[in-house]
Image (cartoon, rainbow, N blue to C red; front, side):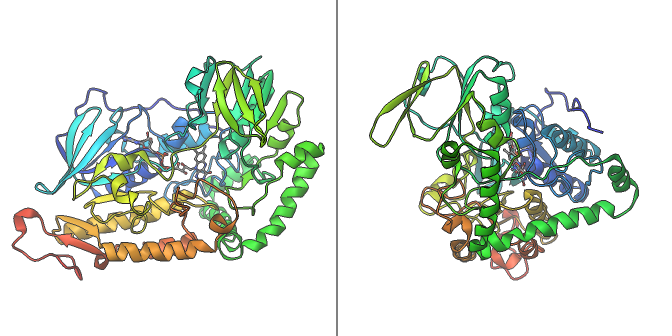
Length: 521
Ligand SMILES: Cc1cc2nc3c(=O)[nH]c(=O)nc-3n(C[C@H](O)[C@H](O)[C@H](O)COP(=O)(O)OP(=O)(O)OC[C@H]3O[C@@H](n4cnc5c(N)ncnc54)[C@H](O)[C@@H]3O)c2cc1C
């Protein structure tokens, strides 16, 4: 049975922030919640700061029609909070959103979350050996700062000349305007990524006309979704281990994708054949089919799965435009072909399915490290990088969840989040046990780690597949994806590795030697 979105009990909005707390977690999506639940279990003192007035991150914000996960829910969920009640193999957004709220409530962490508390800046105070934060609800300091601000959290809107002059309605898929009725409208959809493919069929059926502006055709495979029967759900609820077996089966079948993505991208040619057969079957018109045929190795951009996307594009009220957009006028979008011939497409509404700020996360401008420079400044001379995607030299006591090179092209990010949280909890335990005041990774270790990652990424389909994607930054470096199996990541983060860190004693104990085993003070 689908669970309805529940109203969330929360602390009164006027509740003050403490002036100091041991640990601050920023964000209340999958990552922030996983950290909060683990720290609550450890009995640690912490507060979660969330800029919105509800928890859920991605699954709170993305309410567009058709929004659902693209990794099966039995795997795209916490290992410690299995949900026997998923109704679909790939759950709709409402179920995931409810799941997150329920999990937070059951773990008793709602009173620890401060909503409407956007973190505007965080500065390392070397004198006090703590983070000084400015938030929308006032200042506070913390010994440890954990960022769970999300990789796909800040909508990216392209900088198109004239956009500000547009007289109609514009919005991004992550800030869907449910008050804007598309019925009878001429709608422009810009973008053909993972979100667009889900909402395009809904827009097509509501709008009078839809123009899809496509820069690059995505590879699309059949979506093998199915309802989960009552009997199955009963089994998951009542037979111990049944759901764990289902989760394991999905886990291992997804891990095999790495062979094609990262080890032998040429194998993807066989999958391309299947995708092309699917395209041929669903799109009879050869002219349209030609526009929709991708020209890069499958997997280079996120592989999309939909049974309704292509059929929607074959409808008479749809035009797929492949010439680039050059300008927006008050009532039209203008494209130009290779010869510079301009075409005006009259539209009333523009919907951006243009993704997120991934390789330039806004949080990087809000965090100032030991030398008084922001993360953005640190990364400006190289690229986004960290040790294990979690800790950064020059930024003591800062832990990033879903940081650089922890994204995945093949399976559930929750696996990476849980591995990072385990590692982090172990690190905090060790710090406490040894009375350490601050730690940060050794730069030489961090650099070696990233050199190895970049080398491993060279041969992957994401780097060598012949496409431009949001996995790569402006230098062409892949700073987003983990290059191999997720069990390798888990193995590497099995234990916090103090030898890779510099540790300093608390200021008031500076005369004592550093306490972490194997570490130079
Ligand atoms: C439509 C969509 C579908 C997806 N489907 C899948 C899928 O099937 N499988 C998969 O593995 N991944 C999927 N993803 C990726 C998804 O983002 C992650 O799986 C996961 O939800 C990320 O969790 P998170 O906690 O790291 O970030 P988020 O869920 O983005 O949460 C970040 C939180 O931090 C808050 N925040 C940000 N900045 C601040 C600040 N300065 N101060 C205070 N709070 C702040 C935000 O408000 C938000 O609540 C999908 C993403 C999208 C957009």
